[in-house]
Image 1: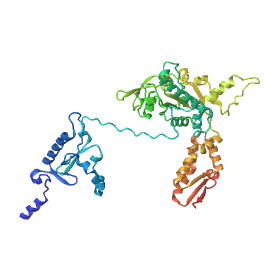
Image 2 (image 1 turned 60 degrees about the vertical axis):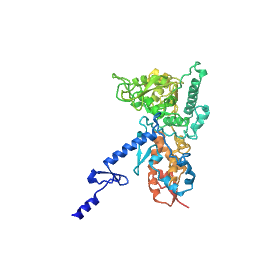
Image 3 (image 1 turned 180 degrees about the horizontal axis):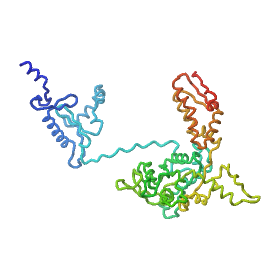
Length: 501
């Protein structure tokens, strides 16, 4: 019996503070690293810890944490200052520094009690303090970014666009002049001496061109070079206020999000509304045109310049979404669309004026004209379904040409981020050199023109014949070079493989 009692007593846990067993105080609390404490001692420790914290770290005047240093017996200097030089050369201090707790590395305070150090969270240090959200780290500016405050002249802007965009010389010239005049106008209005001077209107733009000709890519490149917020939205999802879909204010919500909710920076940004031809006025309809003419009317105040209530982080206004006021007078709006069928309207207008005699135009005389859309007038856009009020707020209308075979070949190799350079960079990571001969470039360009989807066809074509190469090359470490030929793309041969030296 005595042996059994001694065994049960030995296995019974005890509190490491008051040394009483669990049979006397009840269940024990285990805290890391394996320390057992009874409920009574745990409560006493927490009460004393809070009392010491209020007395030593909170001043009654400011209620801010006050960190104190223990002084030595002489009272002249804190002990930490006197022993700083002694600890400097002591190798033991290096190990101690590596074992610092989260309290010493962060913003919390530790309070020792009974050999146990309690870490108080940040909210217990100062109940009146408000936790501020961490700011997003500022991104480093690219080396080729232009400064808006000292914006270069139009021909310099076009020269920068030439490094990334092939062809479309007229479109790049128009955009360079429009951007230069726009931000020059913004700087002029912000200067005190010119606030009562002549008011310069905005130069919003309308881009017309077939799919894949580079409308979106032009705007993206320009916004990246200018380092201004850019919002790209699709007009197909816009509807009249009160109907299912995105309100017109959602265009500005995306711009505000691109500017990290900085209203002042967003008011100097660029908005690109793609597929603008999809909101053309519907013909021969008796129902309400909520996604056509109504959207054009809703965009009028945005294009011209007004104070607009913009929902923050949502596409429509409601009572649960915060709103902010955004002024659109300094926001540059660029609209773009393919306008399918517009070429037939232009062709009809051109052939209708001369139908007989020596100056007559045949009906098929403009079938293969690559510059047919450049002859577009306001009357043609009205015939297509754009209301006059909307067209009048887009004073700069220009067209982009479709891409031919030579333009496709240049797009493959010349831009800074050309498609072939991207694949060469991918294989260079595996220490393999990728090359394309002239016949391969000709075949790729011919197939892209035949697909009639513009530059977007180039990547899909390259993905098809590069699939096997990207799959097989990582298997073999002896491959040094891969040369793509036209016969391999046509399925008549294999790529030329070179072995590493």
